[in-house]
Amino acid sequence: MSLETTKTSITGQVEIDPASLLGKIQKYWNERIHDLEMTSHPPGTREFFRDLDEYRFDKLRYLPRVVDFSGYRGKRLLEVGCGIGTDLVRFASGGAQAVGVDLSATALGLARKNADYSGVGLELGLANGEELPFQDASFDVVYAHGVLQYTADPRRMVAECHRVLKPDGQAIFMVYNRISWLNALSKLMQVSLEHEDAPNLRKYSIREFRELLAGFRQVRIVTERFPVRSRLHRGWKGFLYNHLFVGSFRLLPRPMVRPFGWHLMAFCKR
Image 1 (cartoon, one colour):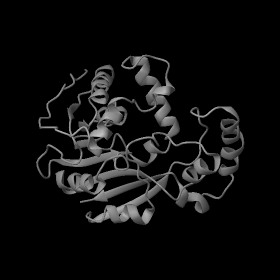
Image 2 (cartoon, rainbow, N blue to C red):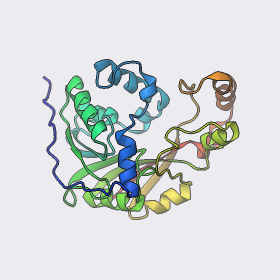
Image 3 (cartoon, rainbow, N blue to C red):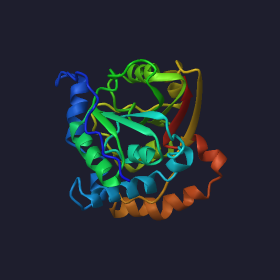
């Protein structure tokens, strides 16, 4: 039996100066949908969500291996920067009490449709991740995959995620690894990274990321996302990447290349 989605039950003032960095970030994500170029179907259709889900978990095929989306049944879970709800729907389908906030009203509108199509209940609301509208110790889990690197004040966002976690709760973050194969390749091939035009984009070394998370009692960082064939880049550069680089990279011993994964995943205990 399908649950009816909660349209918006998160309250709070979201007043952001449009001229501020955070205001520019909000405008940017209101005008863009992540991975939109990977589907030919109109935004908000069932086929649109199917295509973007399939693309995300092909590109990030490591993610269901390191994050057990079905492992949080009965847990109250918050996703900060939930976007169109791709990951949040998976958490909800696995039995989590899923709550999502985002700075983009555009993304939240799509997340509601995604929840409706998927037949899951989500609690969604417009909110600034640097000023979360929740009481202390409200959640068992906080998840922010690919969000800290784009916000105006990542330390403030981390502090807010820590604040709303229950004692012994878990936070899961992902940022981009500055010392990575993809960052080096993008410079060598002179190919821009996705959303490199965002108003704010930070990349971290493992040491810098660990320092950012110093307020947590326990932090485990895992390097992930190694080369897979890309549908995004075409032409001769895309051909070289898909047919030469990806195959050659896979021949390298994984212990040698593991520190250079593009994604730094952090699993933290409060």
